[in-house]
Length: 303
Image 1: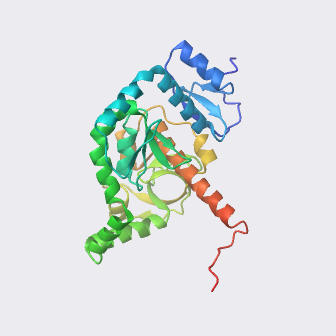
Image 2: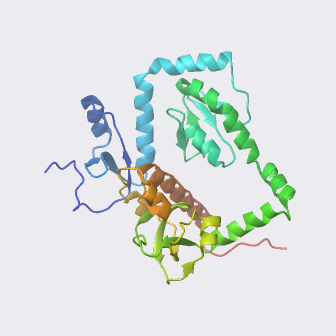
Image 3: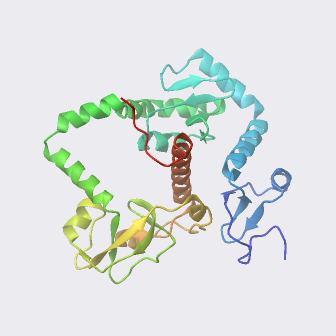
């Protein structure tokens, strides 16, 4: 058996996956850069072990892209100098354009659609090579508008504007419901427990159910449209650890409509990558808190 292939006997390890063009030269250079990489037939992708695998793969891919078209960045840099994008959210660095905004799902979706855009976890910002300037320029109005909407002052102003309204009560009710960490699943078609499951609230690990029935109005109001005549029960859930998410093999195909209708399905690679980034963020926050307060106790200001 080829030792570069992933097999079921191999222990599950922390790492990251990547797709490559199916040409011999690229694969050979990848194997030289990552000698511990293994091919997974199940995933149809390369798996690189290690806690920093995703970051190292990202750097390698960026280097390959830059080498493949070394003149494109110069052209984009000249175009930016001639007609720059003026914004407090964008900085023209020597190597790439850097974008740093308040958190916004719209911003994330727009930037991810830009070719070669990368998330820099160390600096908490996005980098876009100059070769992708044209696509960035087309998407920038939506990015900047979404970023401005999510500034703390703008968010606070919206909260003040709807205070006491029906919309305000609906937002608070949704927040209270999500804090209960429960999710409606069909009584006759429950998900497997203790493995990553995609839902309408993200990827979760279901831990069990006591059989309590969920009323259809609550299901439709806070989770997904409940099917008439279907019985749902509440299932408790938890967020997955980075190790659990990295060692979860994604589904080969997108979910079918019937799976979306029932409320849960097996996650694909794109969904897992989002969940892994969130898990990394939680880990970094936990490590920072531990570093700031090694005793694990909350610090208080002395009088």
